[in-house]
Each structure stands twice: as structure tokens, then as C-alpha cells.
Image 1 (cartoon, rainbow, N blue to C red):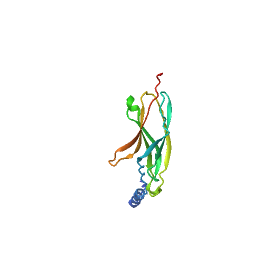
Image 2: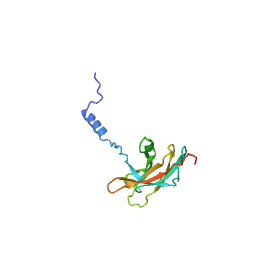
Image 3: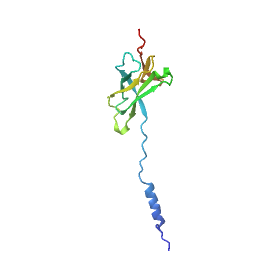
Length: 153
């Protein structure tokens, strides 16, 4: 004698429909990171070789619908000159459309910092991201910090 678990094809069809019709929430796409304007705070007048410095910055969230995500710090390259050219951007993410009000005026400023060790004798140049121009090109505030000579005078 054969045992059939499902004797009626209608029951199988109903089970399939029930399984397929369950509300499966698709994972929401995480919001893409966006840049935020950055300005330096209390930059030193000069660096000394072999020392480390805490560089303080402030970045401004693009709107009240954005949350801070940190700083983007990137050197221009691996050469001695490239290592002394440092690009700094604020990184934000836009909150879900349901959780924010674009009409709010507040663009909070976020205090942040990063460390840099001075291992070169030439000046260091920082490029702080200030936005996009009318052609969509990235714009930067350039700040050059000389390195104090270690040669006796």
C-alpha cells in the first residue's frame, strides 16, 4: 500500500500559492555616500619632521536629511611628492526620504580630525573639498604647511 502525503493536487497548488505570496521585503539599497564641504580648523604654522599631528576639521552636512559617515583622506600617490598631497572630504549618507524634512534649514557642522605623521622634509599640501563648480568639477581649498628644517643655522 502506497502512502501519499498529498492526495489532492489542489492542496499542493494552495501551498505553492501561499509560499509565493508571502510578503518578502526586498533589502533596501543602502544610500550612496555623498561628499560634504570641509574646512580646516587650527592648522599648525609648520610641521616638524618625525612628529605626528592631529588635524582638526569641520564638515557641513549637505542638508538636515544627511547623517555623518566620517572623513575621506586620500594621498595623491605613492611617490614622495604624492604622499605630501592630501585630499580631505567629509562623507555623508542621505537618510531615507521618510525620515527627513528637506525644508529644515539646519545644516549641522561635524567636528572631526585625523592624524598625520611627518616623514618628509618638503611642505605638505592639503586639499579640503569645498564642492562642485558649475561644470561639475571638484573644487578644493588648498593649504600648504611648510616643514621646519632640521639643519642647524
